[in-house]
Image (tube, rainbow, N blue to C red; front, side, top):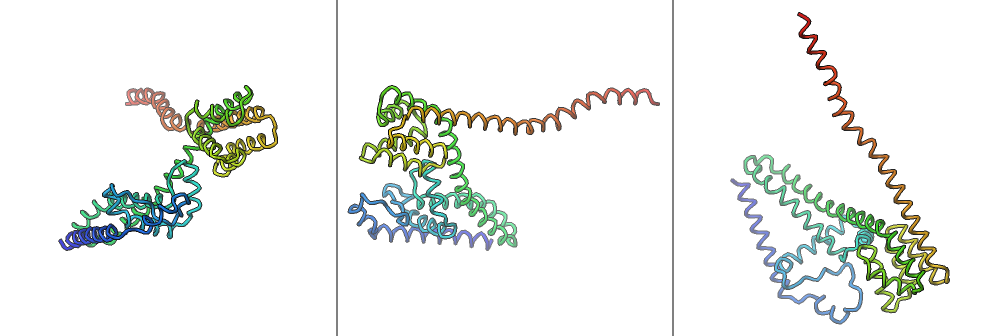
Length: 307
């Protein structure tokens, strides 16, 4: 069993190398640990490795290796700006470095799932080792790409939830403003009374306003980080209304009506597309069954009559 022995030796060697690397990293105080207490209020650069908790044994042992692998994935794939944008749109409190580490973990899981049966097959047929190894590498790459596709799906799901919540939140804001409350007070009332993704975004805007950011600038930042044109128009409309003193309730009512109309049109278009899909069981299941029931008795009668 030379192949099994080689795989076992490689696994043991990799484990010893990881343990030795972790011990060296633990003994040496990281530069981030020495410097970050003095620059805690400054934004952390994306190139800086994610902080590793000392209470997590897995992170303490494999954290440096995973961070290095994440940086390698970033160099190969690139697109840090696009990933950062999608992380913001998905509402995830994760930076690009941590996301790359997650991609590496997904790739390793896919590699392990494929490597276990591949090792058994290679032990029985050593000549198939190279194709199986290539297949394992492909599985790792697919796992890395699957995490990125999952991020895109998270963005789509969150934006769908925001679109569903938008008309209700806009109407509540319009009612509060029409009742005589200021935009900040109306925003505070709506955030306290509602739950959801859009309410969380408005909560961030309210927190920025309370820390001294002008309300127009806070809504401009909401428009810049939003991936939905509806939310961008909503934020820009509120900012312009507050800045110029135009009636805010009319703007909110109009935007809520536009979103409801857009949702109604999307529902009608979706129903039109579903009509074609509904024809598949009718044509391939119901219609053949009706034909069989219609012609089978006649066919049996002909066989009985004809000698």
